[in-house]
Every structure is written in C-alpha cells, then in structure tokens.
Amino acid sequence: MKFLEKIKIFNKKSKIRKDLDNLISNLPESNIIAKDLLKYLSNNTTKCTFDKDIKGCYYVYLNDTIYLSNNQTSKNNYERLCVIAHECIHSVQPKILQFFNFILSNLEVISFILFFILYFLKVNILYIFLGYISLASLSIVFRLILEIWALNKAPKLSKKYLESNNLSKENVENVYNLYNFSTRLLMPLAIFGFFPYRIIRIIVVVIIFVLNI
Image (cartoon, rainbow, N blue to C red; front, side, top):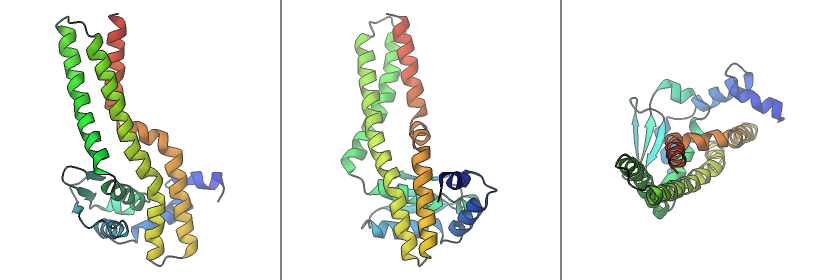
C-alpha cells in the first residue's frame, strides 16, 4: 500500500477509513478484547473497568486497572484495537519504571509550585530552578520510555489479536500496516500530547529565570 493511499486513513469519508472503521466495529466489546490481549501478554492480574461514562482508554498504575469507554463512538473508531493494545502493554511494563514515572511526575508539580513560592519570596532561585529542570527532564524521560515502548509494540499485538480471530490474511495485513503507519506518522504529536502542561510549565520557569538573571 502506497503512502498516498495510507494517508487517506485520516479522511473519515475515504473508502479505506470506512472499511477499517467497519472492520473494527465488528470486533467484540472493548473489555473482551482487553482481556484477550492480557492473556496473550500472560497477564492475569490487571483488572478492566468498562463503563459508558469513561472517556477514552487508559491504564492506571496505582490500582493496576485498564479503564475502557463503553460508547458507540469508541466502538466504531478504527484506532480502538490499537489503543487497547497500547494500554495492555503498559500493564506489563516493569513496575519500577511505572513507579519512577509516578514519583517524578508528582515531584515535578511540587517543585514547580516551590519555584514560584521562592520567586515571590525574593529568594535566590538558581538552585530550585536547576532542581526543577532536572526533575522535569527526568520525568519526561521516564514517560517517554513507557510511551514509545507501548506505541511501537501496539500494532504487533493488534495483529496477533486479529490473526487469532480468523480474519483474512489480507485484512490482518491491511490493519497492521495502517496501524503501523499512523502510529509512526503521528508519534511526534502523540509524544507532545502526553505532557503538554509539563512542557508549558518548563517554558514558564525558563522564561522567569532568564528574565531574573
């Protein structure tokens, strides 16, 4: 499949998009897909919560639970299988990485608040600035490791699921190729979307520090 054909996946009215939306909508409910994917990953501990009030799909490390949306819009979205696979992969990533990601993310927010407190108290902010930038950078690194890992693995796990559900080889390859294509093409945007507020906080701190040198 050529690039110009693949790019049509982002056009909801294109035939390639409609065909993929239709194929994914005919798959089982998201919670059934998630449980099957977890079995493929030899994970029998992670829980799944399936509810119409849930928006999107996400994994929470603290209670080892995948939250899945139970609404028609989510069911018909061509990305549904790949997104569920992404969150299932998060559930089997090393807990030490998940732990440090959680701790550093919270410390980043605390140090951001501390930076402003010291700034308004007219305290020398050099060290807290360096501390904040270090924490923020580390928190981004750990999150990137987790997310890029899941982004890269999700299309392959999706393919394995489709193969086990007796879809034609042509359909399986088409879905895999389109998932792989869209994932890699949109990865820069996806990465920014993981921590937009963190990036904004870093920019604010840097600007304030530079203006007060």
